[in-house]
Image (tube, rainbow, N blue to C red; front, side, top):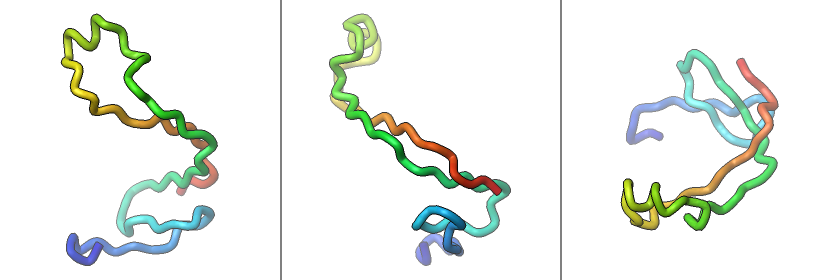
Length: 67
């Protein structure tokens, strides 16, 4: 963070940090992570956008604090 000249402060409920100076903060508790392997993508979408396997995960979370 020092390289980017960002100041951080401890979050209120989650064991992490937030960046100082933002207008709003959302702290979340991760409930589930689902691997997105690409099998769920239709052949139409793969053909239209390419089949490069650049997949991500789906995160389901509960907002436990906002300020």
